[in-house]
Length: 208
Length: 210
Figure 1 (cartoon, rainbow over the protein chains, first blue to last red):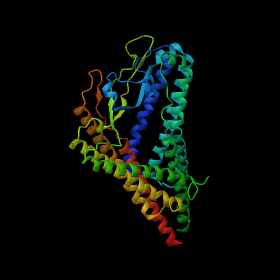
Figure 2 (tube, rainbow over the protein chains, first blue to last red; figure 1 turned 90 degrees about the vertical axis):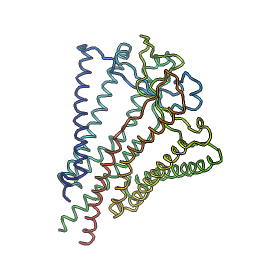
Figure 3 (tube, one colour; figure 1 turned 120 degrees about the vertical axis):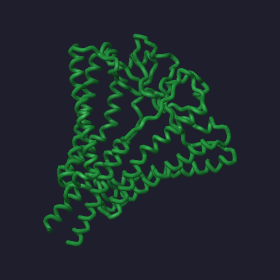
Figure 4 (cartoon, rainbow over the protein chains, first blue to last red; figure 1 turned 135 degrees about the vertical axis):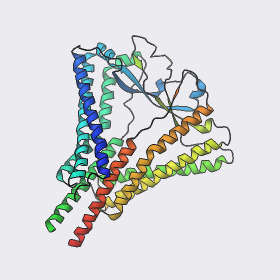
């Protein structure tokens, strides 16, 4: 089973994923350099650098009651300036930065597996043991998305509780959405299917 | 933990997909009933329409430049509204929205049916059955069509809301944005469909060889 070649949908996907991956790599590099510069005080915190957290929708209200009658607020996110967090809780700020960088690195690692998988589908054979391993890594990375989000919001809620109480806000842990876990299980199933395909391909090669 | 076969990860995913399929079927049925009832003057819609707002005022304004609080709303606030509560009697634009919702639900149901059939093949440990590749291709096309469909649906909702409601000046609606993620996802599923098709051919050759 040879690769699909350059005149295929796989090649278009490979190009798109490559563009996204290199862009994310540049963004990640700038992010790390920016964090180090801010920690050493070489640059001031730009107001655009913020941390987003979801809040309970009961905290948000429209000024016009007539609109509130038929509109349901589904999701509200507030942004808190990073300089404000650093001035009040430097330990939390550094911890959050490390956590964000670690999650971003995990995302890059998982995305790299997809990139390599598509590359092998274009230029080489698809049913290889490396591709099975890549699919399993992607599966675990996708399954970790929602739980990592919950940890991020919990860090905010636990360490920023005084400030949050002063502002009469309630931070939610986001929605209890198991979508990423189900998608991760689907990818894991795909890895098992690729395993079967790999066995079948090996048997066929031996038979031929 | 088994991945394929009965009482496996695949059967768990199949259960969730079955649940989603049943839910969509119920909502589709309700939507059809309420469309029929509208001709007798009964207006109700089980599905809210999406609309995003740029700014909302809390009971206490947190983003008024107070140095003690540097919390701002930057992302649009996602809300939904029920058009039946603002539509007066029978309206053709309201019927058009319901028709679009019905179409979307139909496509979703069809896609979930294809996915159910694929998962059923995986549960009987036939991953390279002939029809799996075709079903994956159908799912890929449906996923790619989701992007323009959702964009059009959000614009229809935005237009209906701004035509029928006078919002206060400090409350601005946000126009929908175009999201290409489903197109990329559809392309990846298309690649998977092609992989499954070639694997199915190898499987056939192997059976003939044996």
